Image (tube, rainbow, N blue to C red; front, side):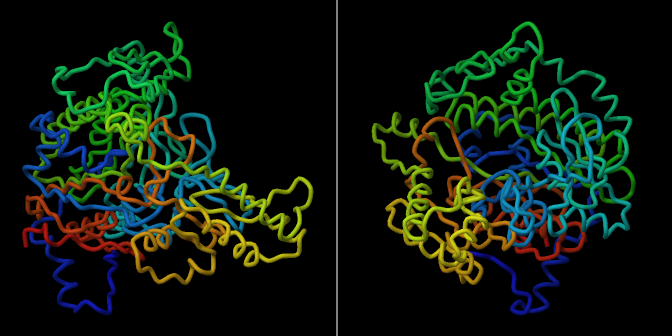
Length: 550
């Protein structure tokens, strides 16, 4: 259930303790906020024996590991996850209810970091900014608390990850577009000199033709799926078995498929870690007498996970290489800044469900049940037509279909002289006749919902009046969308997609393993308490005070 803070309930002395418990020592000079895209908690115990001493094991041995960290929202995807991590609040507060949504006021689809008032700096493409974020991030509060002397630099392969982690006042957000890292005019008129030098070095293109070899002995994979599973995605010239050649579909020259292949390998993570090292040097992070923030979101774990699945040889090898990359980066930080002066946190934006065909093959039992989302909506459309007549020619009943919700076409409703409430009532009646539907909510219902179950809580936390549909519905846990048996996926409001790891290491943090229930929304307020920065507006998370030294 929720751990929302009710300021009027907690005694003032407890609030004061929570805010000051981590302040017994000098504030850190550098906060490093690391996100590994699509990493479920179970990767930590499953793969620990294969990790070296300087990456994940360093975090475990010297910091706090929280084992029961679960997202309390329904939108377990990249944009919403990063927004929760940075703001300490869910979509109903921060506004990021999906990677995209149908905007009821604008009457069109909106990408979570789209901004037509900005342009891309250093490359081509549509403008990007945090304009759609409706509250502040930890980084924003850090900048405010330091009189804007503290720097916030945010890096990722994905634009939405870099932008939403950094926040409104970030000095710079960078993301990868083909062979270079780019930014937006929101952050300035040009790339810093250190970024231009990095791009000119050609490091991203330098991986063309590299071979991703298996590093572990065959015995290490006895608990994994077979290496040549037919439901894996070997596209972009990757193939489904080791070794994987990183060229894309053309082995003689770089094409767009090369960059897609690169993202499904550890080499993209190596490039991002190299950029992070240049950011520390170029911006003098952690060496300016004020607390700085460096955000790094690695997206390759997500690309590898989708393509090969969480029980694949590739995922195990990816995590082993990610462990090596982290170890190298921590040693770099120790040389350049001093780990004693750093506060490091690592988590994930969402987890992932196993590939259904893997579960059926490995167990000998196919317990998953199939329900076609397309067929469900078609049944709703047929019932609407039967009850109210066909909508005007060329007009569909639904104009928006995003994030488990649908928005009725205003033209279709006007053409049949019915209200959204009438259409919603009929549609919910149809949805609730399907055995695989766990719950269905009309707009009015979900807006006034007092959650009594975890599903209701997660549905409410992902709901926005202007960014969610007229009707929201969810499949039951064992039901999957028919036709989606291949490849791994996430986005469902259940624990397999919501349970992630959380590490915190640094001054003021008591090392140990903590089994208390926690949420990724707890990270931002905890960092605020440890650094003295203000809490983010509308935060829903709590301070993880149990891991403080005092």
